[in-house]
Each structure stands twice: as structure tokens, then as C-alpha cells.
Length: 99
Image 1: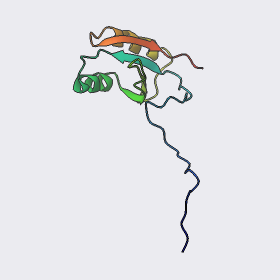
Image 2 (image 1 turned 90 degrees about the horizontal axis):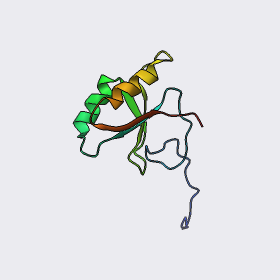
Image 3 (image 1 turned 180 degrees about the horizontal axis):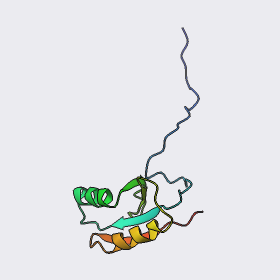
Image 4 (image 1 turned 90 degrees about the vertical axis):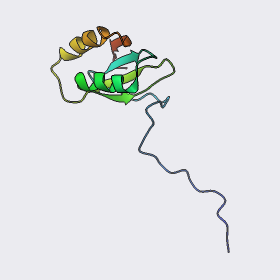
């Protein structure tokens, strides 16, 4: 009878949202920092109202990367950023530059 001491590490096709590994950022991505006092329910409502979904974060600064849930016209990310900035629960919102 033998004992297996080690096995090769499995390949993972997933990553956590807070993974430190840089991933390509899709066009139209927005980096958002919600206020620490914002509830999860309020954050979820805001994302739903703006038709956004989280694809990354939070990072060490508390920033999330969000993208439109549906394809949008090219000018739409700037309008979305302005609407996010107008919300008192958002500390920062900016369009992410592609690396």
C-alpha cells in the first residue's frame, strides 16, 4: 500500500474579486469607492438602479470595479460616473483606464 505525499496543484479557472493579480479591465469599467457607512442593501440598490455589476474588489482602498450589466453607448460611462458622484454614499467614482 502506498501513500501519496504530494499532488500537483490543480489549475483554477476562477479568481476571487479581491485577488491581487491584475486582470484585464473591460472597456467602460468604473472604479467606485462607497462610503464605509453605506449599507449592503443601499449599495445593491445603487448598482441595480445604475444597471451595474461588480467584477472586482474591494481592493485595499475599498474600491470596487463595476461594469454595465448590458452593453452601453460609448458616452454612457461618463454619464454613469456623474450619476454615481452625485450620490452621497459614493466617495469616489472614475472611469478605469485600460492598462
